[in-house]
Amino acid sequence: MSTAKESGRLQLRDADRELLRRYHELGDESARDALVERHMPLVRSLARRYAGRGEPLEDIEQVGAIGLIKAIDRFDLEREVVLATYATPNVVGEIKRHFRDKGWAIRVPRALQEMNAKMSATIDRLTSTLGRSPSIGEIAESLQATPEEVLEAMEVGSAYTTLSLSAPVGEDAADPLEVIGKEDEGFEHSEDREVLAPALARLPQREREILRMRFEEGLPQTQIAEQVGLSQMHVSRLIRRSLMAMREELD
Image (cartoon, rainbow, N blue to C red):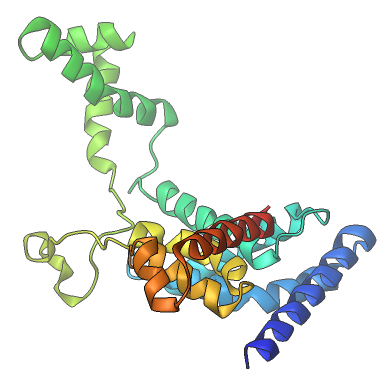
C-alpha cells in the first residue's frame, strides 16, 4: 500500500514538473491552467482556515488562487522542491495580505495611516519623558506634523478594524466577552506542517513514526528506542538521517 502511494506521489510530482517545463520553457498557457486546476484543492484547503472572518469563502479562494498562480510563475525548475510545497506559503501569504489590506473600514490616506501607526509609541514615549499625558501640540512636534494632522489621524484611527486571523467565529461570536478563549496551540504550526508534509511523506513508515514520537509526543530517544526495539544510538542516527533527507527535499 505504501509503495503504491509513493508511486502515485512520484507520478504527480513528475506530471507537475512536465507542466511547469512546458509553461516556463515553451510559454504554454494551457499548462499553467492545468497546474492551477490540479492544485485548487490545496488552495481550498488553505482558504478554509480563514473562513468566517468577514469575507466569503469564495473570495478567499480566489485570493489564494492568485497566490498559486504567482508561485507557478516564480517556480524555479532547477530546484527539486515539489510545487505543492513551494506554493503553500505563497497562497497563505496572499490570503494574509488580503486580510491586512481589508483592515481599514474606509479608505484613509496612507500618510494618515502611517501617522496613526506611529502615534501610540510616540504618546507612550512622551508620557514617560514628561511624566504626564502629552498635549496635541507636543505630539505634533514629535511627529513633525501639524496639530490638525494629529487630530485627523486620531479621528481616522476609529476607522481601522482589526481583522484577527485567529478570532473566534460562529453564531455566538457577536459578543466578544462570551467568546474569549485561549489560542489554539497548534495553529501557528499548521502552515509549517503543510509545508513539511510532502517531504515527510517520502520517508519510510518507521522513520515517520520515530519523528512523530520525538517531535509531536516529545518522547526522549531512550523511550523511543524501547518502543521501536532499536538501540538509542540507532534511533539517534535515524532521526539525523531523516531530518537531513527532509531538508534536502525542501531545498
